[in-house]
Every structure is written in structure tokens, then in C-alpha cells.
Image 1 (cartoon, one colour):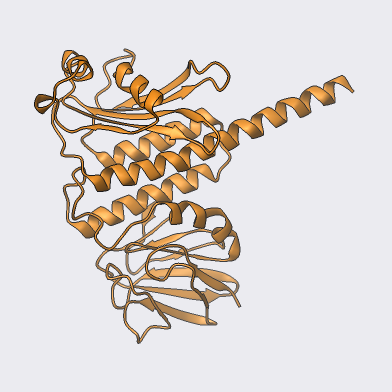
Image 2 (tube, rainbow, N blue to C red):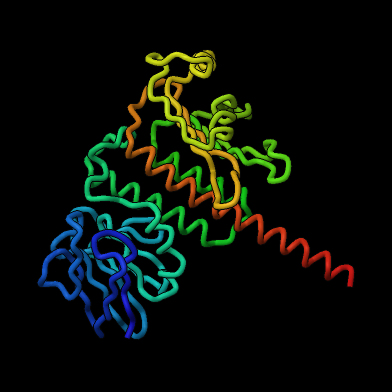
Amino acid sequence: MATLYVLNGPNIGESFKLKDGHTYIGRSAKNDIKIKDRTVSRRHLRITNYEGKYLVTDLKSRNGTFCNGKYINHPFQFEVKEGEPVAIGMTLICIGERCVEQNMPFFDSVELTKDTGEQSGIFKVNKHRTNQRKLELLYNLSDTLSQNLPLNKALTRILSHMLDLLGKIDTGAFILLDPETGATADVIAASLKPIDDSPILYCSDLVKQVIEDRKPIVIPNVQTEESELIDTLKIQRIESAMCFPLLSPSQIMGAIYFDSVGRRYEFSREDVSFFSALSHRIAAAIERTRFESDIATIADKLSSDS
């Protein structure tokens, strides 16, 4: 009999045995599995165990069911494999222990509280939809990081997911440092308004200060502040910007950068907390990928020398 695990939210860490046949999940106590998340509908989801397959059906829930990068529409059934996370409301669930090992540390490190969305300056939508979009981002980031992709390809995908969430931000970039020299080794950048094949520009002075101080800098409105850094942003016609250090447990890997040219944002403490948590998780993944690459290189060299 398979086990369903709750990876985050009010029921985090709980596990439930799935029944043969249908298992109903929702906020109401009348379900087989009760989820205490108020963004989950009273009768949200049905999981059918059929000949060793797990078929998921959304039961016309208010906030939907998100899996494998898309929403499941009623009345269609969707097969979910063991280890594949499913998002209902703000809560993430999965079948099988493999998903717990891969995803629990990630989702547990980026908390979505019940008040998430009420103080967010970036996400100008109702708070339930805000939480859904943030959970979608966490889902997509976790999925990307679990695929063992080449570093540049993984970061390009992650940046695309971030810009999709932010919506109206003009530019995003990962600035990676050489671990030995500390110089800029690579820049993975994207823009919502690319101009031909022209290079995507970012404020290098802002990135340099974030890396030196190892602290995030958030500037919601350049017109209300004064400093040399602000003057540089004004020259580049940047209205708002935020930048976060990529800090692993052992070193600084670089920075994540976002800016807006045509509009201003009132970034909040919640926005800073959310992206700071993401940056720490991504930095750890970058460090792990580089370490595995170094080990593979050494192994190849030893093999060729033998």
C-alpha cells in the first residue's frame, strides 16, 4: 500500500496510507485525508489506485491542482508517478519516499505562511493566487534542480521561471564568480524585451556591492533615494532593482539580479525573505554541481592516466 507525504504547509511531515480504489483529499473532515490548509478546497482531489497506477482528479477545486508543470482540469484524470510532487492550494504532496528525500529540504527552506501575499509588493494579485504562483515557482525550481542538467542550462530554466512569476520585471541575471579568483566567470541573463542580439545589460555596480557586503540590496524607487549607486541606476534608466548574494555554506558563488526600467515596485520584507531563501538554495545547488563536475574531471583524468 502506497504512502502519501505532505512536504510543506500546516500538515508538513505527515504521511497517510492510500486506500485501494479512491482516496479523497481536502479541507473537510469528511475526506480520507484532511489538509488544514485554507487554500485547499473542502473536497479538493481524488487519487485512484488502479492496477498499480495513481490517477489524480481535481474535484472542481477553487485554487486548482498543479502537477508536472500544468494544472489538472476537471474531470480529466492525470497519472502521477511515485516521487512526483503535486500542489494543492499552498500545500505540496507526493506519493513515495523518493519525493520526500528530493524535495522536502527545498520546500521546507522556503516557507509560504498563511499570510503570504498580503504584504508582497511584487505580486499584485489576490493572496491565494500569489501563493499558488510562488508554489509553482518552487515546484519548477525543485524539478529543474533534480534533473542533473548542465549548470548553465539549469540556471537558464530557473531564470525563465523567475521572470515568468515576476511578470513585469524587465531583466534578470545570474552572475557567477570564479571560485578561485573571485572574478566574474559567467553571466546568464534574460530580458522580457530583448533587442535583437544585443547583450543584456545589468547594473554591475549594484552586483559588486552585494557580493562585497554579502547582503541583499532592494531599491524600489530610485527617485526617493540618493547615493552614488542610485546615480548609476538613474544613468542606466533603471527605476527599481533588487539583487541577492548566492551564498553557499562555504563561499559566495555570485548573485541574482533583477531590475525594472519602465516602472517602480514597492518591494516588501516578504519579497526579500522569499528571494533570499531561494538564493541560498540555488547557491547550494550550484556548489554541488561544481563539486560533482570537478570529481568527474578528476576521475576522467585518473582513468586516462591508468
